[in-house]
Length: 491
Image (tube, helix red, strand yellow):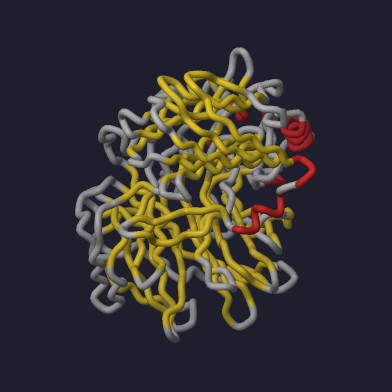
């Protein structure tokens, strides 16, 4: 049953007696709880926020509605890790309820200054007519993880020419000044991003719109992120309202990037190439990046989408975050690879390997099964038409990743993955890849899969909801022969 507006915009202390305990019991009884992904203790998780390194830890917050699986009163929930792999829950980071975030602490980012971690975020408020009024707010976290809100918003007004869809500040430092980019909607209902500048993180000057070649590309740009990598400028954002084109833009909302010359901070001109999707799967949105102490650019995203139901809604929780990914640029593409720290999850005593030539057949190998694992496979298709892997498989369920050599396409098929998800966006995802050797690095968890194809040239991120006994893995070659080299590490 859908919650009423009053139920959705409650704070934790307004929960009914026993409501949270009941939710916790539902969540803990769920077989789809993840083994190694960040997930909410109860309720709904969405955008990653405040991804940063401070006082010896990686800090990662996320949007959190604790009392249900719909989008209600948003908190920032705080997790941290010393190695990007093993995360511990710290607790609530930003609690809504002030005059400037009365209806939720929306997305934002973090930067260290003067020994504290500064958290910039959008405060969501609504007036008596339920009209949105966004404020850009600041909070400071000290070395003891104590968060204190700055008493006034740092940006109180939406500039002329833009609607109240004005949110998600992403901050960075350049020389001695600070900048943030924010997602916006023009009054003609087209999406864009705008730029602000500050000397102290408290007084901000509106500089104007980022000048791109995309004058009419969706109706809103959410969660923008500007970074510089390998001498290039990269603008990441999540445009809403893009129509599907063949194998592209098939999700309800997209996430992608532009690569170009460095952003001119004075003129705000950004010369760039075409828009590319970041992920080819079903469930990827609102990514955020940070620079690690050793100079890597690392990205995490929400493994889910707005306005879609998921099977765990019935169990009192929804969504998780992706594993962290290191970014690099090859040509005109952004390459994603699992951070090197992920190998810490490998257990040698739970490692198996297989080397075989398959000839128009499907085959399973000893040691290749499970619910949560990392699997690496290299397939050389000498003359097979289609090669691939069925995983989380049983007699009735399977998820399939395959390469169609004739069409030169990688295909993810979750039409038989278990409990069905919304069919509004179909059951398969495809992308073109021209290669005689297909390398797959797969991170499978209780209710998700992340597949890195050919060293991160393409990535498929998806939720799946198989039964507990669907643990099989089957390799196949159809229409000819193919050589397989595979390794698995069960987590």
